[in-house]
Length: 397
Figure 1 (cartoon, rainbow, N blue to C red):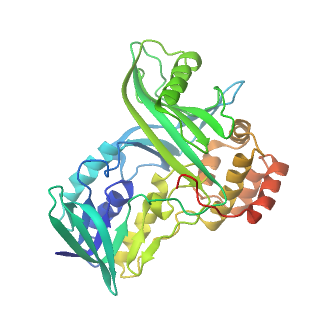
Figure 2 (figure 1 turned 135 degrees about the vertical axis):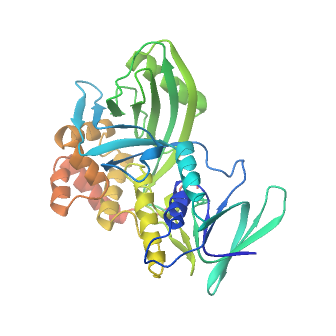
Figure 3 (figure 1 turned 180 degrees about the horizontal axis):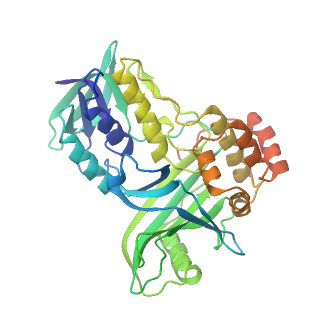
């Protein structure tokens, strides 16, 4: 049996981020030993994916950033696009394989974090710590005893919520024969496409060169589509809307992100905690997770270094979560038209302020000013209805 101060289950964004923060010794802080338990290659490993976030200046993971942009654009269903410079922020894109390579390189430089490739069968809570029971790909039993355990694996089902929408998408990494993209700007939301009966849909274009880009079709709606339906939507978007010709799809990605006002349990036993999306790191109103993961793991690492009880804090404030609950209900109930709502918001609020708002970094008076630039009466009605909504399990949970 291996023993460590900390055990981390799962090597996705949250697990790798926490391991990375614990690996390098910090002068004056107590040294920590950690074991990172990653599933063997197969269905339990996270699929390749792309993470996007925004921050000012140089960042901790810039060596893994594929591309970044300071000009963002939103296309309403009709009319001229809305474009803004988000300086001093940069909108950054990281591919998971590049992130994993960077973290693995850094972990190899220090002895504080050991890696174990095994499938976790159970986590046994003890009075002081926990034991992880796992097995290797060839069936051998392995176990880790740790004072603190952080589980980043996806939860088996979603908690009961008043409103849950799914942000589901399919993306094509495309290459064209001739220059077709402007690498200096990214299209954050493009509503120039047919909308679903419930929810909303938009395109998303992240150019990595004049001939290469990630092009995605995204929906906020109650259920996912078939692969053929996504590809039909992408065919329409790339051809009829973007006018791309001689298109080669070099890689694809798909994903489903719950957008829910459900409360996520961040502690499952006295010394066992959930981090990442399973610990509430996803922003309910947008689906962005990477920035929340960084705030959460930074707080956990600081608590461990200082000898404090490392309960993962909520990555998003109570005020932010309350506003998200109102927006989710307004979208789900049809009180607001999604494309018109977001198009108007981006047209009436500077993008830098709006991105700070989405990161929970605005003050109450700024939140009020932004709220006054939304459809006030429908949003007030949604706010009045939310407290009376029952919490129900998600049907597919």
